[in-house]
Length: 281
Ligand code: RET
Image 1 (cartoon, rainbow, N blue to C red):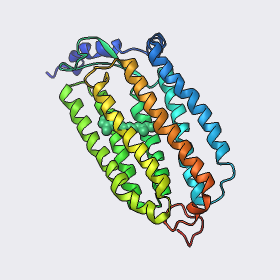
Image 2 (image 1 turned 30 degrees about the horizontal axis):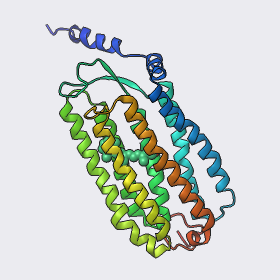
Image 3 (image 1 turned 180 degrees about the vertical axis):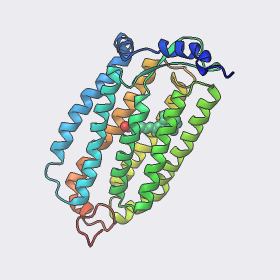
């Protein structure tokens, strides 16, 4: 006779029962000042950035300039949602780390996995704004954005895998490979497009800011609680929040200020994406 599958389940069920609720997550987050302040600093900044960016874009009229503006505005909009998810405990879970991980056997480790999920929406918006600024073509924009989404999803997988430490790092490696594809487009494809579009100066500044800061994320993952655990959960979270502040708000502010002051340059761009008339498209 076939044994009912449930015979094996008690252990699994126990593990499931042990999983903490959102309320437990919220209590743990609130008890960790470093972590909680890192979330709230970003919620506050995202709120201010949304208002400021709406104001800065109030007179933009050209269709492509508006598209850049909307893509840029999406960055703090996604961010505020993302950080409310983290601060409330909705997108934070607890993970038992596998053997071989520095935090193995230390019980349930807090994992703010919502970060990686919401990067899937915010980073494509950043790349869309940059690609449009450079006046790139659809193929290159599609390449950068799809590689970027794959980077975020495999990064999420790396953070959530707890069957084996090796598989965590394998996902990390795959995510880094996708990241390098994004960096390639940023460093070797878009600068030429931006030169042709007459936006190379601001594009150069934003590209450098982006590439340097974005490299900080995988380094932080490797050193932080998800990776080698040299940094605490709170310190890792502040690291990401600090990088986010520069990579999102400073980036978006510089970009929007330039677009608002140089709308005609963006409008005269002959690139196929984001043009105002059907002849352009
Ligand atoms: C992870 C870990 C796996 C390897 C790599 C990563 C890269 C993440 C990056 C994130 C950028 C986020 C930004 C967010 C703004 O909202 C997922 C940390 C390569 C580059 C700019």
